[in-house]
Amino acid sequence: MKAIILAGGSGERFWPLSTSKKPKQFLKIFSDKSLIRETFERLLFKLKSEDIFVVTAERYKEETLRELPELNEKNVLLEPVARNTAPACFLGTLVANDEEVVFVLPADHYIPNKEKFWKTVEKGIYAAENYNGLVTMGINPTRPETGYGYIEAGEELEENIMKVKSFREKPNMETALEYIESGNYYWNSGMFFWKKDIFLEEMRKYNEDIYNSMIELDPNNTEHLHRVYPTLRKISIDYALMEKSERVYTIKAEYEWSDVGNWVSVREMEGYSDNEKNVHLVDSKNVFVKTDKNVGVVGLENIIIIDTKNGLLVAKEDKINDIREIVSQLKKKG
Ligand code: GDD
Ligand code: MG
Image (cartoon, rainbow, N blue to C red; front, top):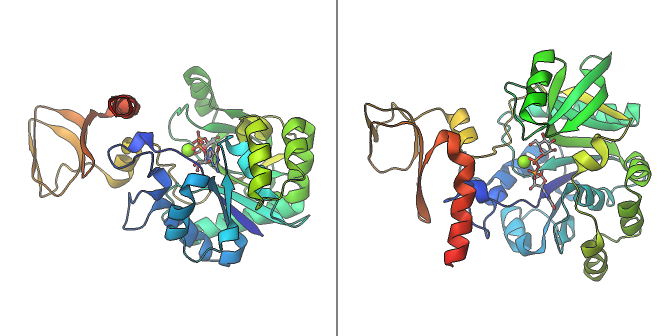
């Protein structure tokens, strides 16, 4: 098996911790290790480093190797320009042997329990080997989140392995609510298993342009990548394959998971700071603070306060996604 870590992301939603030089995968949010380091160690629990690959942007090469010094340079596959996850999955899958299983996963998710994670991963590998399809990991949904893909489960073929009836990437709020109420939907975790030959077959069927451009690519040939990559269509694997293929399966994820989308998801995991020693509240509640300084809050609720060397953020929880605006203002002001 080959594991492919996707690490192309930007980090706008974690200002002031993140900057364009330090996107989300390099942030140390939950421990003294970066998210990509945590992901890598989760894989090393059962895999050898030679079977682990990272697909990332050229500008993140050095930092990736600094974080993962066990990796051979040729295991870091470099994209000259970002073309979203379908091309990144293709590039990663090219390193596998014909019928070998590939496990694709994001660099920047939070999964605290390695044992439970691997229990589901082993089921995923088994499903990819035995059902010859594209295997997703389904998470039990807890709210009508519109930032995720939704998996409609069909027939249960074996314990916790189901055929997928339909896949819908990022539905609107009304549709997400319907899905949650119907009870038959899972969130897509963004991690996938497939055999190389099956993936290539499905890409050829539904994305012939990308298939034709990439099928002869040597994933370590910089000159070749520079020629081909700019010509590729930008599309995520969810739209390119999961919504289209009739061979999608899902396994129920049996571990705690968060995609760490923004500061509110960090707060959900860590809890409010209301009772902490350095946080002093007057007529306030639901305050999340990241700093060692003494912080006083008067007359406010549902507030996020993040203090780093790079800046100080004070935000209302329900406006947290607007911190992208700060990043673009900072860019304009140079
Ligand atoms: N190498 C590379 N190149 N990686 C990329 C690129 C790219 O062009 N674009 C995104 N990635 C990486 C991101 O860094 C992240 O680790 C992963 O691929 C997923 O991309 P996101 O942009 O974070 O996707 P999303 O969160 O909007 O949606 C996906 O994940 C959700 C769960 O977190 C989808 O798969 C959804 O269906 C899913 O629910
Ligand atoms: Mg994501």
